[in-house]
Image 1 (tube, rainbow, N blue to C red):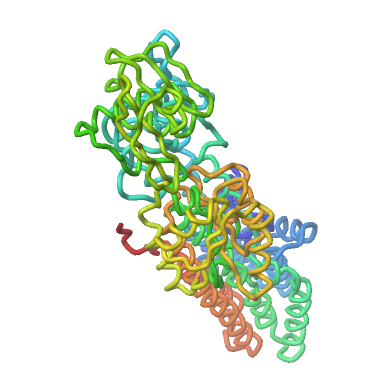
Image 2: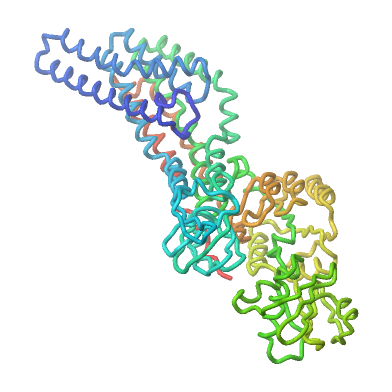
Length: 634
């Protein structure tokens, strides 16, 4: 019975008004139960005063009749699967009144209301999970003022560009980039990662993480609903309201089901002339367990996924994940970090620390991607003092130091400065030379590094049945081939434009494969949308890629792709068991009721058995909450 939700989707998020309504109905049910008990005691103590006993039972039935009839009327105006239950209970109550069975008229809705309360308490706590996440978004922040003073403010007042201070024990108030300091952050509430994140200058951090030690200063990048945690909450709410495919299928035949139940009840009454058997059929046919089987399973799966740092936009995609047969994956920002890092140094110098400090100092003076990558090699307090800085467009940077003129840039820069260099090493990536006071110090070789978990993640997907794997990238063929060999992918398509990626994904589908498409950039958005399931890397992904994806990995850990597939398959097995419980149990109770095997109190026994089946379905769905991914090791 769903009187507190008045025909809305099962296991849905209750508003404060609906919660108050549910509390009132529980109060009415308890009062009615008291009156019903008093009436039965009166009938036992004074059997000759039948009128008083009937009056007490009648008042008890009237108390619970109001929410029952109101829900039934609402379900007539706004048809839904749960509305069928409301209508059947109302009809059973009217039938009990018509036959003069006031005991059944009172006890039947009381049992159903209490059953509904147990259902709400057992429903896996999706609302509590959302509320808990919501509490992470509400905190105090220490905003750094223009004069350097620190002011405590509500984090809801923060704007992009604000500078905030996060001390040990504080919760990070919003998404931001570390501008100074170093600390360990507990990101488990957002990414599901149990190992603390070591935050350093230039690193992006998520609002809601807890600073375990150290002192950080962050430049705020996103707040409120635009923050990573805000998107987690929005996606969970959206997924909770979504209807799984099996629910939509059941809704299509809801009207026919109601007619069938009414005909069965009429035939039962005609053959047996037993009003209790007819009422028992109406109650037993309430499809709560079957209706809840899919949503309860889906919400449990979505809640578990969120706990592991995986956002699934809809329960439909949760089901699709179970049947994937191939993988189409992007390179930059997906298999790799998407940022340049120093890979090697080609030099004859012994003091490489001094070289790195000089390179970082010159890199800080330029906005070029190579310079920005070098700027983070050492902290600011270790960098050299520069003056007379000149950036030569497309070539590099030249500046004066206490030890003479320093230069950082391409080989052409040193030709212009008449500085003899070492031979340029062969390298599939950017190269920057470094010179000081006319002496060439060496070459700095940069590259986009492969994520350490990439090979393990792809191997795990192959074991799960995604043996066909394709690397799609806009990068050069040599770079793509080198990466593919490192991570174990044999099929490579390089220098691919967004349209090329889209056509390749569509081609995979035409060949009968069901591809999972994984990417993070703007050029991946078309392919993400075209795949059976599109997965975006949430930590550094472009907004359009996140919007196009069906699944978002908050922490961008590729090993969670295997978690998605395993969880989906576990959800499908749970759903199959739930459907068997819901359908089989309902048919069995209806059969027992129709043949009169439930006895003189058939309607009440049917109500108890109905609630038991509902709790079995919810309990089975709740087992998903114990799902754990294998221990992630690098």
